[in-house]
Length: 526
Ligand code: FRU
Image (tube, rainbow, N blue to C red; front, side, top):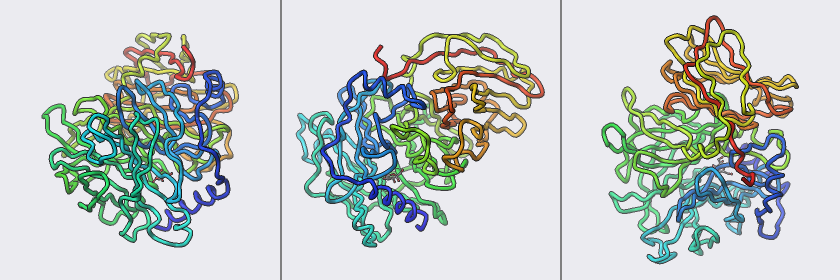
């Protein structure tokens, strides 16, 4: 509880320092302004970033009429956290985004914290009609005044709706719809799903160190169903997401509960975790009870999924915030702060005693592929520079390792530049670890935590056969195998990384076949 109080207290202080009442914020920019902005140092080229200022969690994600909507925690007056708004963007393919005006602004009930949106097809809320069903956004109203006054009930759940494909939003006059009567201060981040088997809406809500579930026939009246936690766990849980996934092998339906954890992640700070189990409309039972990590890197937080996305029952599409509360407000970007991860598809994989999730980048990203460099079959002994029609700062690598002929104890790749910065991705076969070392990845001084490491994750040798790696100016995303292992990390070199080296220690790393694609930027006019 104390950690959270310090965290929110610090955030509020920063917010109060820079809080101003202003005209409604517009995020629209002309095409050329956008292109110029997206050429700033460290600005990712094919990841979603806000046009300017501070962003954290993805929020209010739904798909309607051919458009994926992405809202996000946004503070339009500063590059640090402050009074939260919902920024807003849409995409037809999850790859190229169009910025829209801010969707929700703070009001007399407080800041607009995280939450999710649903398409209310049957108009259960009565906000629209059957002909024009409403999209309903559920979010936490965080009242900073009530918090300062020492009250426990400063986080309550509220609604807003749109009848025009998310272009404008009306807050419900009956807000808040779910008041905090728990006497637990952390009571936030509602994520709603329609549960057809019991004919009601189910809300997953983070309540300090657990998730509570609430049910409603109409999105306005909520009643408590149950709660789920780990006995003895006192870490702060945030941003839950509950959804079903079908086992591709057996056709069985399992339920996934995603929860972001605010401290003590495997490589420090904050990270997204999940449980797989069963949900009967009232209660979630994890099976097995173990918590798993969605991503082993330091930079994938608050990962949540799209409502209504046009995918089959075996898939769920989501996105995470590519940062970490340990240093998010200190990273050396000037005009804006934070990017989202690449959008990813989650699928179930049966493992001994239960299930895990695979995540892989959405296929639509292939549309960004430009020049192709084939590496062919290649036995790497010591060090080899990898050159071709691509920039090591903006590319996709597909590597198939010939495990049978690979003898190296350690192998991997290094990104470097003329300034002496380097980022290392390595595979340690003996200790079955993948590691990322960003300790020398760029100028230090902005955060001690950022430069700790190296960061590691356990792997199965089998996972290394197929590696898919995305490099985008200031980020690395590794997908191993068909997706059991994800590793996402950010970094800030003094100059763009222009050299890519493959290396092997104590033996050879045999790449059976390899391809590098240069990737187009998503903000440039084709
Ligand atoms: C997670 C979080 C949420 C909260 C939001 C505030 O990163 O702390 O729990 O709603 O950020 O911006």
